[in-house]
Amino acid sequence: MLLVGLFSLRVVDVIDIILFAILLYEIYNLVKGTAAIRIFIGIIALYLIWKIVKALQMQLLTEILGQFISVGVIALIVVFQPEIRQFLLMVGNTKIIKNQRKRFLFWQFKINSPVSLNIDNIVKASQKMAETRTGALIVIAQQNELAQYISTGQTVDAKISEVLLETIFFKNSPLHDGAVIIIGENIKAARCILPVSNKATIPPSYGLRHRAAVGITEKSDAIAIIVSEERGEIAYSYEGRLHENVSPSDLSNFLEGLFKK
Image 1 (cartoon, rainbow, N blue to C red):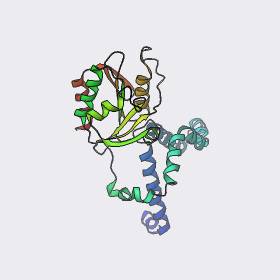
Image 2 (cartoon, rainbow, N blue to C red; image 1 turned 180 degrees about the vertical axis):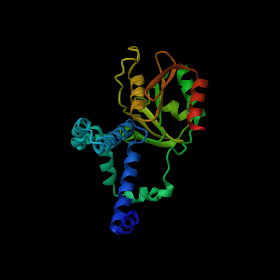
Image 3 (cartoon, rainbow, N blue to C red; image 1 turned 180 degrees about the horizontal axis):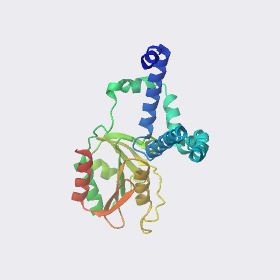
Image 4 (tube, rainbow, N blue to C red; image 1 turned 90 degrees about the vertical axis):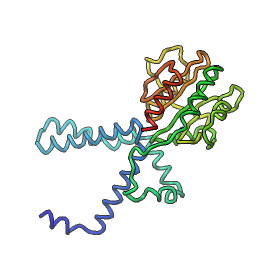
């Protein structure tokens, strides 16, 4: 029976499966490295559990889980509103075929591809800005490229350098207010607006820089480095956790552990 089913597949069915796989892959690219990927996995797990209890004829659980599934589309729209918006913007882009052609084929599918980073320049710039009490907020992207936050700032698209970072955050610079976002070896944008965390565990004495650093790392897999102009201290946030008053060597070791595996 299985062989009969396989041979009865039409060309349209094969195309249907391939297009669904491509769509699923694009959705993965949108939510990877964000909190949404966990929600996405949770929804799939809930659906599978519902199928299992339904097959086992467990009436009470089937009824309860069925209510969640019945409103699943509305829930998805609410929960994934930013990702859906980003997906629709991508579909509406006339350059989508040109931009995506290099990763259209499945043998080019990559997860956790290595990202290079000029760690020395970032650490040295952070150290000098701490010594001169120059406030700074540096966000380093990983798998999630933070396109929605880059679009809020001023495009820079220049190679990372110690001098450039210090110049951007110089108090009289028009770009000093906001965050710098780094992808790979390039500073992509400056003066970027980030989401602010409402965590009660953040000390009240800390300002918006620290809350924005925690906020962006709650919503993505990015690393945020903060230089406090009040205290002249370096801190960093990763996975929504704030690491306070770290030394330049501690910061360097942490970044090397992430980017030089």
